[in-house]
Image (cartoon, rainbow, N blue to C red; front, side):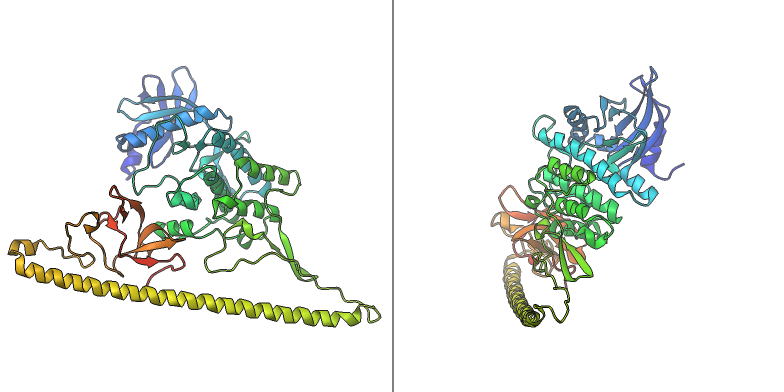
Length: 497
């Protein structure tokens, strides 16, 4: 007997009959929203049945999202998208989908079982996935949850794209909206704009395809984090590392394809799934990819070469200068009787002097930037001290007023939290405001506030605009907190003091 109540409930369905025609034969798997069973129709047809968990079925939004999967797949009509045959509701009120029964395993299981997947086999799988996404994007459907576990490899050698349950659809469907503070997708495969709650299009799926390839080729995620909040912040603020730095054995052309798919700025990714698929097909046909910037060799001597991608492939890491690709060649040694032997020394001296000059300029620029950063930190510290002094003065005035006008019962109701100021009746801004250096800080990226974060990145909460037009840190245990007065927190810091 299982100790997991949900698993026990799902297992109890085995042997029952749905709607008098579908006999549940065995449990295939259990997910966060639904369980999948192998079943047999009364006329002998075998299929897979996906049943929404009862506790999930009570939500109209989640029921609508579940039913949306059938509509999205029906609009696609692509053979590589899992076929949905029917939709109905069980006797206990749980919606279920009847789908084709697949024989095989997911891409994630295949990679784990075999210790990896051969490069060309992975490209063939991804090519089929991009073909499905190309059709979906043309219909205004964004999958939003491409990952290894949602790509199924059949025993006959085919590929199936699963789980369109959280797809965003331009028209039709149920117009499902996400509740404040919730995100749809799997964080290690989500694009930065998807995590930040911005507008997304097909390029979010392209990022997820790149993250899937990155995961299979390197056996790690694009970013790693000790907590979900730390991972979320890294995915939202830091560009992906170049694939070649973690998988040097992968072909340079494939590294270029993956790096472009994972570009932090969506405008630098492949514009369409079709463009990325064309590069993959050309590589498989032994042609150089035209859309991905070609690798450039930087040679310091005739015996070594370093492959470098074009800087437009991905945004540089914060605080790191972007280096343009270049080719520096060293002339081969010639005999002493060569007519160019005498002229090579002056050219070499000029090159050395030029190198020292460039190095000096870069060093000067570095110190200027560091000086500016130090000035900003000093200004920020001064602002924090000023805010604390203002807070103290405000608290003193409030205590004086309270002591002269309050009754004992009103004094007992004064908030005891050290992180908030006494409330007033001035309007929306009267909500509790934590003092600087208190429980929450604002994560700042490109002048925007994607999240409020707690100390040591233990929790992260999205910034939203409430009905009064005030930006607040939503979803916190303390309720919506106006972001005014919260100290800045930059993504280059991994922990605060």
